[in-house]
Length: 361
Ligand SMILES: Cc1cc2nc3c(=O)[nH]c(=O)nc-3n(C[C@H](O)[C@H](O)[C@H](O)COP(=O)(O)O)c2cc1C
Image (cartoon, rainbow, N blue to C red; front, side, top):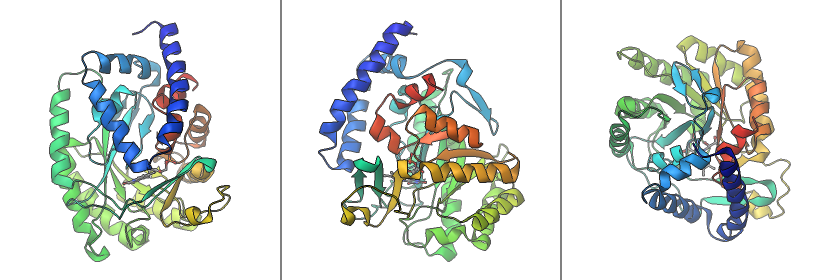
């Protein structure tokens, strides 16, 4: 470990540097910046000792943050939400930045390019992002191979970052055949992920959210759970829901989650709601896609609280939506979340986000 004062100075320096760097990065298209930054990080992590130094500054090996959730040992409760590392390409670098877990995907059976660009927009005044990526990913087989190579490279290591697999259906698959897509992804990724999240809540795949309807949801989840239970070591199975469900729809989800024996829920995905935004550019605000970041924070906490109270804590809840600082994470935990995920906060707060949340926890 680095001495505490050196670590704190390095963190404060990174924070200052990132607020400068962000001004420059935000001059360029967000999707290009995303890949540029992650590829840059990957490159510098290849320099001997640099990855170790980065993880000494950003990661923590304090046992006080570790916890067991649905039978898995997490080094800390701050994870990275799905959609950031869709293709499982940056796991080493994300681990060095201190994430306790990363949810890869959304993975679909075959590769798909996603929607036309531009498809990711910043709303800095609202500390938000708007995206209509459309499940661009390399497909289940390629991602499974990449993951299993990564897993082999981790063999024998003491601390291991948990990797969740977020699975979805292809754009071209009609809803009646969606079950098959989920099954293909589930089987392909089974040996290389620690837990699964079934995604029926992204707003950018036509018709996907209709799968949140009771009958469809029951069919998909009970099928996956029965496949799961045929395995010698079943994986924790979770569902990711949309923040735009009303409470009666959430009641339906809870009923099915209990019936099928889900291990937990991820609440929530991006929202279609545009109320209360202060961004003046109305053309930007009304682009199609899902909104994430600060405007989603309160709604996602509200959903977590509602589900926690309704279920008496019997479902593990991972809160996603507008987590930027320790205070946001704490509120979600107080509402009943067992862990939180960041995404938009990572873009606005920078690489020290996990460390900063944990040290003020
Ligand atoms: C550009 C982008 C792509 C995303 N892609 C996915 C995805 O493929 N699957 C998914 O379940 N969620 C996806 N999400 C949603 C995030 O995982 C997260 O639930 C949401 O952004 C709310 O968290 P945040 O406010 O911290 O960003 C995406 C979000 C963004 C901003």
